[in-house]
Image (cartoon, rainbow, N blue to C red; front, side, top):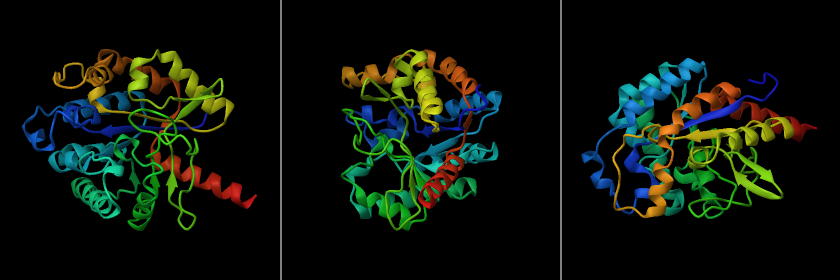
Length: 291
């Protein structure tokens, strides 16, 4: 680990294998309670991996999961990790209006706080679904007292993305201290590349992620933001045969290689919680404004 590098933001989007956007057309929310629940065993393995590496992270947790797994939710907090909101049931922000979104994040926050008795101040939109269509989402987050969001992927992608958004932390509202911290991208040959985790981390060689994080840390002097999901370390999860081929390939490729790559990643760089990164980035912006 390079001790001179910034402390990067490490995050886990806590959802089960059947709650992902790739399968939403073939698995209805009414079916969720009848499906094999694997999120607890997977999160326990992640907690062990983080403990082994002596790193802390932020767990952006679905309210639906927190309500059904209060003991697990409390255990995350007791281990020194941050609990933050991933919304109630993985509904994309742009599929709601402001009133519906407000109710969604309020319900999720209550479930997480009731389970773990900790304050929730951070939010990540399912499928990075805050974009140019949803300026009201930041208004709602600010009015409900959130201090930061990590809900933007500043890339072009067929599933999500807000290409015009800044690559690094910014304030989306002129009247609020609310901070948006986009997931990491790298630049190569004038092109912006997604490099913050998830399927890209699983599918591409580890060397790509190492290069991208080093570019952000060393060349740009900024912290990276990395994310993954508990189901990504679970090669034994059920297979969804009715989904599109493209969705199945995205979801199942290299599940057996994910845990070893994560172990290497958490040892190769400095990592910490997203709320602490948000505090440092907020101070950076204030210093820039004062200069």
